[in-house]
Picture 1 (tube, helix red, strand yellow):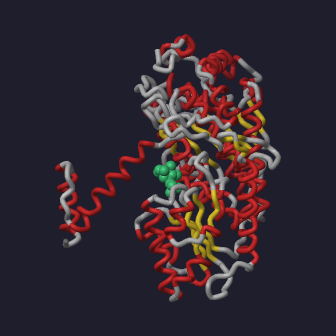
Picture 2 (cartoon, rainbow, N blue to C red; picture 1 turned 90 degrees about the vertical axis):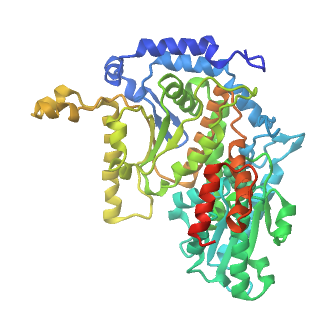
Picture 3 (cartoon, rainbow, N blue to C red; picture 1 turned 180 degrees about the horizontal axis):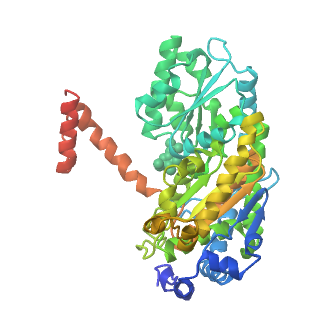
Length: 549
Ligand code: F6P
C-alpha cells in the first residue's frame, strides 16, 4: 500500500493482469497479428486534427489495449488530467498548478488559479508580444544608434532554449528570411562567440529568457552579451534598446538592468519545459510573425481539447502513453526513439528529451517512496534517413527492444520546388520501408529463397517485431507543430500518472547546479572545497596544472 492509500502499482490486479497477458502473448509476433486481423492496418489508427496515427505495428491486441486502459483507469489518469486542466496544484513537491494548457486557451475561456482567471493575463502578454514582434519585424523598433534590428539572439537554457530553438528550426520556411535568429544556451563562451562573431551590435537584439532569472549559465551569457554590446556602442544606455527579458521574476530582471517595461511575463504555473508557447516563444514569434504563432497555439489547443474530451479508446495521448508503458514495464525496454522524416524536425527529439526525461526521470513516487517499477525511458533519435545509415542497424538486429515513433509528412514544405520537391517521395519511401522492415523483418526462408549462401543466412535474417508508431500529416505547418508538441506533453502526463510520479518538478538537476557553484572557486582561485572527494580533487588539480595555474 502507498502512503497515500493507493495500492502499490505493481501489486494492483490491473498490473498483474498485464504481466500474465504478456506471458500469454510471448511468441505471437506482428506477422501473426496481421495474419489474424485483415483489417488491422487501417483499423489500428486514430485521426487527431491533422495527425494520422497508426499504431498497428505494435505488439498488442485489443485485449492488450483493454488491459492497459484498465491500468489507466485504476491509476486515475483522467482524474489527474482533469485536475491539471482545472488548475489544481498537481505539481505536489513545488505546490504549483500545471497550466501550460492555459497558455493556449481561447480568449473567452476561464481557467482559475487560486480563484483568479489567468486567461486574460495570458492574452494580454500575447498581445504585448505581438506588438513588439511587429515593431521589430517592420523596422519600427530600432537599436540605440537608430539602425534597424536584423539579428535576434535568444539567450536561455533548458526550457528557455530548447522549445523556441526547436520550433524556429521546424518553422524556418515560415520565417522572415531577412532576420538572423540564433540561440545561445551553453555557458561555454564558444557558444556566444560563434553566435555573435559576425553580427553588428548596432543591429542585434538580445532576448534573455529565464523563468527564474537566476540560472547561472543564462545570466553569465547575458552579462557577457551586454559587455559585447556596450563595448561596441560605447554607451550603457544602449542596453534599453538591445535587451528584453522573458521571465517570471521582475525583480531580478530589473537588477540585471533591463527595464521591466521590456519584460514579457509568464507565471510559476508554467513549467520550463512546457513554456515555449508562453513569452518564452518571443524569438519564434518575431521570426514567424504573430499570426503564425497563433496558428501554432490553435494546434496545441486542438490536441488539448482532444485529450480532455476523447474517450479512452480513441484518446491519442492516452494511447501513446500506455503503449510506452507496455514496453517500458512489461517488455523491459529501456529507451524510446523518436525518428522524424523531416529535416526541419532535426531538433525535435532533443526538445522531447527535456520534456520527457526531465518530467519522468524520477525514482521517487508522489508519496515519497521509491518506485518498484521502471519509469521514464531514455528518449533519443535524429532525423530518420541519417539514422538509417548510423544506428538503425541496432534497432533492426540488435539485442535490445527499441520502440520508435516515425513522424513524416505527405507534402514537402511549400518553399521546395523542382528536383528538391521531387526528392520527397524518396524520403517517404524510406519512411514507409523502415517501419515495414522493423515490424515484419525477413525470415531465414525468405533469405534462402534469394540464394544467399547458408553461412550468411543468419546474418541477413531480420527478426522483426520491432514496434513503431507512425504519425503522418499532410504538411508541417505551425498548427501541426503545436499538435505534435501537445500530443507528447500529454503523453508525459499519462505516463507520470500511471507511475505515480510528479512529472512537473525537477529536483534531480538541482544538485549539479549547487556543486558547480561550490567547485568554481577551486578552479579559479585554487581554494580548498570542503568535502570534495579525492577523485574530483585530483581532477581539479590536473585542470589547474594544464591551465598553468
Ligand atoms: O535544468 C533545470 C531547469 O530548471 C529547467 O527545468 C529549465 O527549463 C531550465 O533549468 C532553465 O531555467 P530558467 O528558465 O529559470 O533559466
